[in-house]
Amino acid sequence: MVPNFSGRDASAAWKTGWETHVQAPLARFKQTFEGGIPGLALPGGAPILLKSRMPKPAPDFGPSLGRIGSLEVRLATKKSEIRRAQRLRYKVFYEEMSAIPSGLAMLKRRDIDAYDPICDHLLVIDHAAVKAKPFRKPRPKVVGTYRLLRGDRAEGGTGFYSAGEFDIGPLLDRHPGKRFLELGRSCVLKPYRTKRTVELLWHGIWAYVLHHRIDAMLGCASLEGTDPDRLALQLSFLHHHARAPEAWRARAVSDRFVAMDRLAPEAVNPKVALQSLPPLMKGYLRIGATFGDGAVIDRQFGTTDVFVVLPVEAIAARYIGHFGAEADRHAA
Image (tube, rainbow, N blue to C red):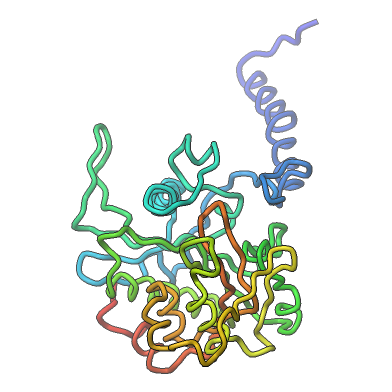
């Protein structure tokens, strides 16, 4: 027998049925699996996360964090902005460099992994390079990006990305209560690999560090190439001249460990070695970062990775003044 509803009674019954049988079960499902769906995971073991809305920045923080001329550094606040960062990463890592894309990445022309949904994404945008597409509002070009993963989010299930290559558990255990921030997936479009772009990225990172009261930054830094003997000078320099203090040191996982001390200390010319390092790694060193024990070969990305760590208290004061939130020339 079909109930004979009409008017207000029909509307109330429909609303009650919708809330009971559709909205409530969906809410319970999302609450149960908000940290990932058990049994479903991407390669590498990270769980597949449910999509969620981008969190809005706090009223006193962002999304715009600084500007030099036409270049602005800001946090992504929309999923479309994250997709633009992923497209930039694909262009740099897979088209310019020698990374091997997965089927999904190749299909979408974006560098995608399971960590993206829980990270904040720092963008450098060029307002003078406006990209127009049919039926779309013109928008400025994304020319640089950094991915930021805070420890409180990593603890939710995925852990830090760098834990796949380096044993960072002992390091974290030695510093209970410290707030860690993982930096990763950094890239800049080739024409924009200049001093001011790097300054803006670091200005954005420093503003983020201050806002979230971060105690230390960590992550993987990469040398291009997968033959450690051809990188002997750079690896040996980092080992002999920039090795992290034991309290802040992490070691490459045992089954992927590649020795870094390939040359004796006296065979390393520090000046030549420093000049041969990638700009990003030189920047880390200037600010006060140090490096871990052992390197790891990443064959997908065609790189040799090293562990980098930077306690905030170790950052030289002159760089805090240069990149810091009070630097007037970076004012948004």
